[in-house]
Length: 133
Image: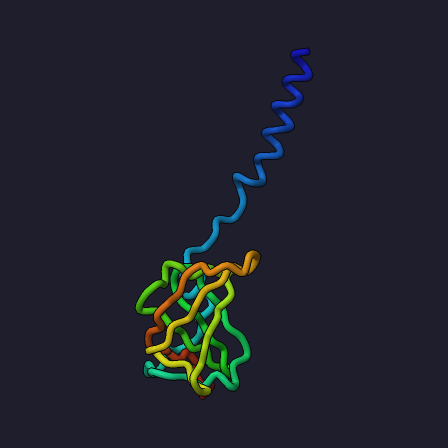
């Protein structure tokens, strides 16, 4: 009986080892820094045109990044940023073709489609790759 118990304990230790050595998840600020690596911030804008938007990325608890062409527009919400979850869906209601710093965005859980919060947008900061000289 003792060899069986020792085998079970050893197997449990081996199974737990990968979890203990798993790579730690980056913080929201670290994720944003990695995404913006090599880019330079421009002048903040109150509104952006969403007509040419390629994608949107939610950075947990930190920001929303809109990709328009080769420019990344970073919005750090004035309110509700702690509710941002990269597994949420953004529900944006526009009155025109622009998204502005006075707008709010609802967050919906991807699985249940239930309301999970909202954010009040801030200014949009463009990040571009520097031009080669």
